[in-house]
Length: 170
Ligand code: HEC
Image 1 (cartoon, rainbow, N blue to C red):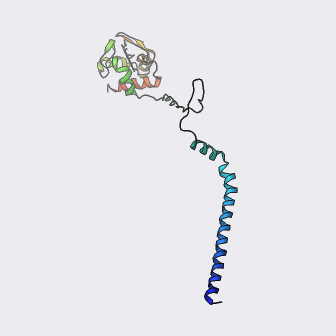
Image 2 (image 1 turned 60 degrees about the vertical axis):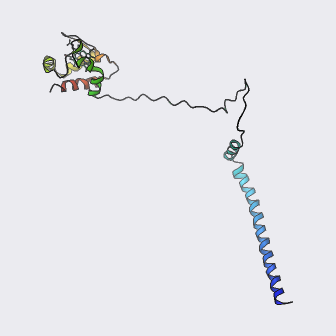
Image 3 (image 1 turned 180 degrees about the vertical axis):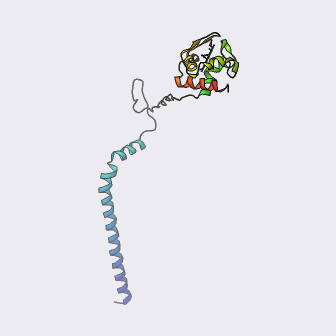
């Protein structure tokens, strides 16, 4: 036997063994993935759900009388915006609730900023002014409705507006 022949035989043997080992590893890996993935992945509820949604028919026919509401797309109604409870500042209240009368002296209201019309009123002190603004007041010139007619305003908001009005005199 020549040396070449010996080398060739040895070479084939090594190749054969390596090939057999490769195939054995492949088979073993497939077997293991079958055993493990089958149990942990493919049978999992999440995977099954995904699978079902991927292979579900594109369109479905609903005959009259058939109720398949659970599968019909539902449109969630947007949550109603929560009413935000905010406290209005003095100027904010004045400009929405008081300016209508006190801006120009409508209905006998003392005009904001006209010091002469406020001298006697200011002399009563801020507490009385606030009380009259909150509870309403009928004096010599007209009728001041409670909270200027905006009963939705809080006491603090109306009082802030009174402060704002009297500040305009200084
Ligand atoms: C519908 C018109 C009207 C609106 C709106 C109105 N007022 Fe008056 N207010 C009057 C009149 C009229 C008087 C004067 C009453 C009188 O002395 O005869 C008055 C008087 C006042 C007085 C003086 C009270 C006193 O003792 O002399 C204050 C303070 C006052 N208003 C605050 C307010 C505030 C604050 C608001 C807004 C929240 C407001 N008013 C909205 C008509 C109004």
